[in-house]
Image (cartoon, rainbow, N blue to C red; front, side, top):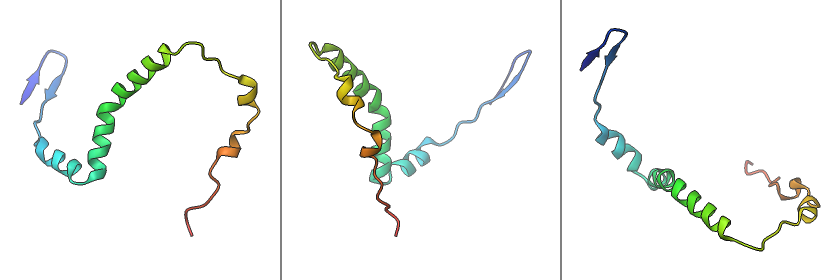
Length: 80
């Protein structure tokens, strides 16, 4: 389909979405990736709502600062 106006030409193409959907959904990894993408915002919003509902919570910055982040880094190599 071609659409034009005074300043530009637009070319619209309709592709078969079923082929792409079948390819992405053929294995469990693809399904999990799509589900994660769709549900991430809902999860993030719910988490923020629950965090805002907490009261009487304080951070102990001195305790947090006393740990070096490198203590938590995974230094093991998975390649042999």
